[in-house]
Image (tube, rainbow over all chains, first blue to last red; front, side, top):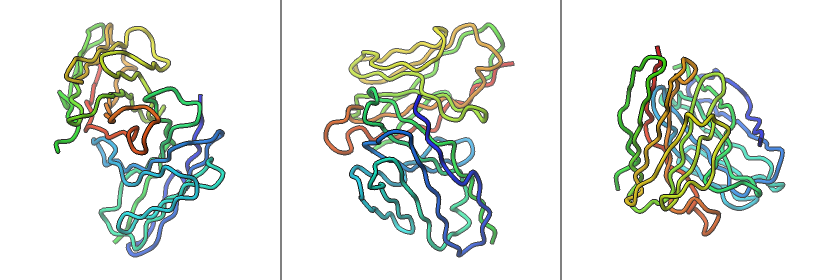
Amino acid sequence: GQQLNQSPQSMFIQEGEDVSMNCTSSSIFNTWLWYKQDPGEGPVLLIALYKAGELTSNGRLTAQFGITRKDSFLNISASIPSDVGIYFCAGYDRGSTLGRLYFGRGTQLTVWP
Amino acid sequence: KAGVTQTPRYLIKTRGQQVTLSCSPISGHRSVSWYQQTPGQGLQFLFEYFSETQRNKGNFPGRFSGRQFSNSRSEMNVSTLELGDSALYLCASSLKGAQGALGTDTQYFGPGTRLTVL
């Protein structure tokens, strides 16, 4: 099946620092989504991207849909302790059958005060 | 608008038993997808339902099944439970689940059901 490579696997940063994570796929994607998951909870949608080159912000979060359609990145500026959690990239590839999202393995973010 | 709800939140079963999990989508959403999440395998797709029809299925054994009702609520069933079925089961809903108008296939997740098999 489709493989999404998400990096880094984990990040340990100090409060106030900026964070960047990215995701690449082996095939073209039509949609890229970024989710955050807290322990024991379901993923919460942060940003949705629908067009190649699209750059979208949600507060301190910014995400971009790569021009090649095979990658996306998420930036978090001025991190705060509540940013702790696991961040997942996900998306639909061009040949994807309905209702199926492909996921990266996640980036575990730890923020030190 | 209320989000996706899943019941129960926690379940403990023993090997060989069966279990039924329930998912109520966001009002107006007609597509429901199910995923299994484990530390070792990450998020894996189980199946997707739209208008009471299963449109897509992942690579899980036949012990995993589901259905969708006319009000878009969905259930999944796991029969003859195995230890390896212990996981967080997530459902997600979207308006259409198809790549039509922008955003109609964006999936919103419920809080999950934590299943522990002893």
